Figure (cartoon, rainbow, N blue to C red):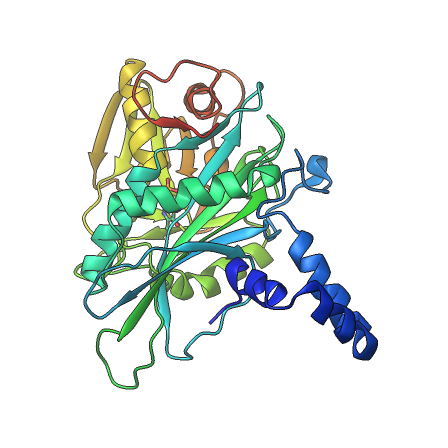
Length: 377
Ligand SMILES: Cc1ncc(COP(=O)(O)O)c(C=O)c1O
């Protein structure tokens, strides 16, 4: 399917030095390519990749290696292996569910992972909903650790960004009719990233979407499946073309309650109370959401999970979004039915306090008393 490192090595080592010499006479270029392949180390160990770290956006910059592991119908994953990042051959009828977690570099150069076990469990639950086999939590976490470590030179310097790690599970075997795929593939790849939104860390301007819905009760809105992102693209591109940063979706039945944004969860602050839509299968249970709720409770806020009426946006003090990619992002304005409401932001905001507490744990600035952080080196 793909050329793994061992396959490349094998072809390079198939020939003796004498054979390569003879080979050189006829095909010098190919012989020298094979010689070069032999010399390459398994991992590239330079401290940093050659990149402009000060100007990282959220475009894809594939790091060196990805991890590939296969599963057949019986649900057993065989041992995976790292291979150079590259295109894979894929059945045209394949589909995917995926995850997103990050590795951070602290000021002493240590590499830290944030709660990858939570992503593993979410993939497991999502896979069950989609009738897919999934790697065990241990297999998933091991794959994430190996991928992050092998790609360590792509982890940005402290304070400049993070290494976004994307584990994904897809039906990779061919099938025409409707049914579970005959083969599954689990892949983990990584990309260094900076800010998710073009606004950087500035406040977001959200648009409440009333025409398109993201998910329906009984559907699979709570699964991190590609099927939940395709339906939002139209609403998102329309809002972006009108200058908004992202879309806030409403419940599909009454169009009265907040759900979440296209790629993050939402929180509404009023005084010392922080409310967030309860998870009932239509929104994604964010790892950041869960972590921020715990941090907010620790800091003495009242945290409420409930059906949050869109009208509560009208007299909220603050609104913020959470997600692995977006972090804890302040919302400056929300536009609903042509009315624009403004919110408090800035250094003294609740959002900023929670953001700073979370980032300090993720980057090893404050001690991790919760067992959320795994150090890789
Ligand atoms: C639709 C959606 N909601 C919420 C989130 C936030 O989840 P997490 O905090 O686990 O990244 C994400 C990102 O993964 C998302 O895509």
